[in-house]
Image (cartoon, rainbow, N blue to C red):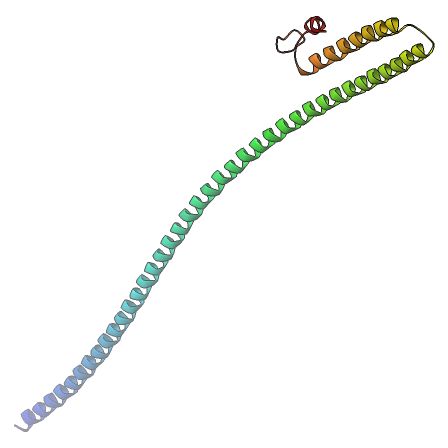
Length: 188
């Protein structure tokens, strides 16, 4: 009986030591489980943080895409405005060339009028000289009838020259709107 009691005590002691081991193992398992849970929670929070960062990056990417699209639209607008400005520049260049051509025409017409003015001045001077010649003839005693005859023919010749010059300057000589010298001579 004493052996049995002893065996029973040994068994109890072994059982208690095993129980303590199991308790320690259970506690370590619980601690490990809690550590895993905390790590899992950390990973979850990190994954949530990564997801939120991913969403932020997606939002930033969308913003950049919209900015890119806006810049593309603005670029197209600037290109169209540049094309419009180029077209306007070409129009202004053509208008400038037209104005230059008109200026050259006006200059040539001005030169023609200057030449005509000089011709009229020389004719006037010749008429004045002829007039002084007539006065000299009168002073030297020629008859009045001969003087007036010479003056009349010289006047008609001068008028014909001036009329032809004006007709060439302002219209066709044979145009009906410009009177011809024969009509004027009939009236005289």
